[in-house]
Image 1: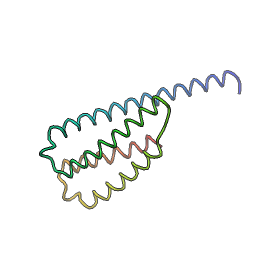
Image 2: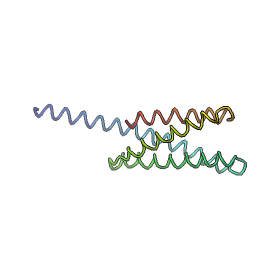
Image 3: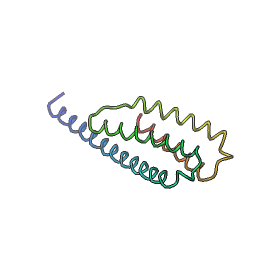
Length: 130
């Protein structure tokens, strides 16, 4: 491999890393925005919300915190905890799919729609991590 080939490959690699980090930062901002909105909602309405919904929201918030921390580590230090993320996403996808199969007919439209959106987001995340 000639010096020019190595240089071109190095530039491509740097450009790919830059683009990947831009996507990661965008995802970090999106997750953070959802986290903040949910936190505000929980603070305002926790006294009137269904305890099951509160537990579910808390679980989602913990997942968001973990994902934000992981993205921060990848961007700042190049450390990747992808295996745990993939495993968790797959487990949550499977669990929620079973939950939907058993409870969709009893769920209100809003909760059902939001749960389905979350499932779609999990699938997107899996594609992103693969």
